Image 1 (spheres, helix red, strand yellow):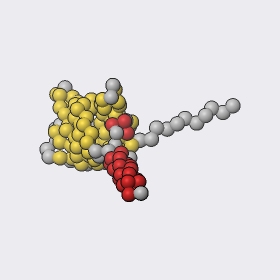
Image 2: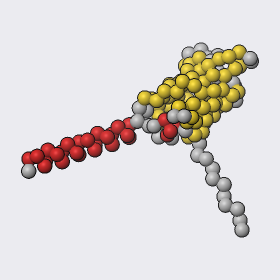
Image 3: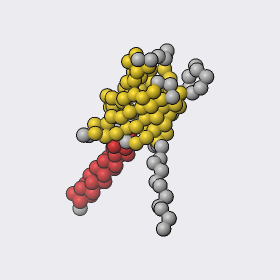
Image 4: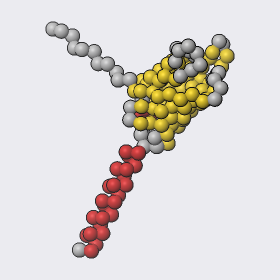
Length: 140
């Protein structure tokens, strides 16, 4: 009887431990998709950036598009539990630049901080997952 109780306790502990791990760590595949962010700037309008994360050969990469810098490439993506880091490389007036990002996943939001590019200091913003719209079925 004592052995049975010990076995059941061990199984329950292992189940709780593995459930806690899966809930705390978003898989890279969970980031795949389109995200829209806004950053405040010292210019007359906020900077909007759309990120497209893709999973290629098990590696998370993507692209970015901004109303200020134009198109960019997302590289060096690292996921550690709910924390993410990545680099956005782009050209501004023909000059190659990059932003370094740290982000924290919070449901369908990424809490972003970025440095580099042509900014002084750090910018913060929030990216929200954009739901893909499913077209309505054609009328018969």
